[in-house]
Length: 390
Length: 129
Image 1: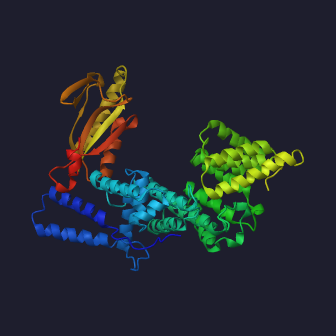
Image 2: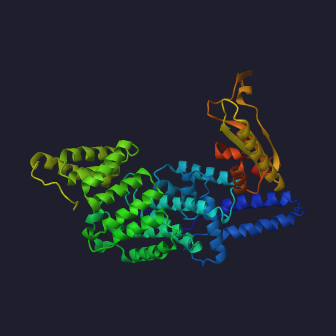
Image 3: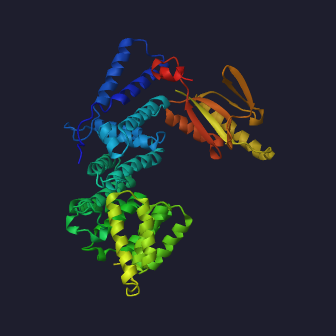
């Protein structure tokens, strides 16, 4: 666990300069700037506005004006004209109050690289004239998607680190949840924002149960459900139930509904896989990417049997888009194992192992590989093909 | 701020049918009229086909002129507008109205304002090269 919170040195400093320069430009153009004192007064006003922007929990109560400033800042930091890595770094630096060193560590890049990303993003905001405001209504849906995407990526980076030992980066996820809360409280009528917050809460509820004492990854079906955070589950479920009736369904809401179903039931066997498969099918229609289709296939395997799921996964494997995606090979391996096809399962586990560097995941895959290798040697033919995954 | 809206589209191998060309021309005229009405029009030109282009480089003090545009790309710079916009979002709004945006792409580039010290490029990038 690394020190995360703390008030940034000066969260609004760079944007102050930008806003000031832009304001002065505007005044000059209008030819109104005759008086030096007027310029100074204007500058001081903007400085004061921006100095008020500080992360929640900074001690002071946040007024409506401060909240509006935060919202403007989020949209500026997540503007689509900025590269995605710059948006993420800038959002965490200016809104999350993380230091450059902390963000660099979270994304496994040298601090100098991260600092450079921040400089480039700030420079582009200034030089390209990226506005400091909440987008007008006609642009809002498109721009909000961009903001939510940044928060989702930050959350995921904290939830499932892409490599190394830090499987759990609790603080990064907590930061994403906190920012999502801000967006939801400021834009309560945007169902996808609420959906994303619910999705994060419902996943985060399982965080403590997801990793064993030795850092090993524990599958959803094997988790100790008494360690799930029931308060987070209740909050997430309430949000999903509130937002689905708006009938403006989107990918985050569907994923949140899926997560809510996973969080229900006394044990894994009670999971309503048929309904989860239906929700994934709706998700595939909105977002037909290979990863979403893989998840759909997994749900179908549980609802209708491993053979049906395996056929869908084989189709995906033939397309080649997920050739280097370890989870496709791990999921295929699991279904082959459940069908008693040990040697094919072993080869798929080996393939998955070649593709992941995450240590807990490697430990898990290696232990499954040993199991199917033993089965292939000693118990071949004895094992009945499973009709349903257990 | 001023922005250049650079229009990159595929160059047809042969002239399009007259009615198509006419419709495209009318769409451009409508766009030009719209930004003029909004006071945003600062200039712009359509460019002759790339077959007429010459690329110039100076290397070791020698001027080297070569035929054609510098890169082998499908989409070529076909023309540009210079517009006045409050910020990047307004410039993007104009860019999205350009007929070529539907089949090609529009690059939006701020124009340096050298009268304003704060928006000048850093010294090293002026001196470099």
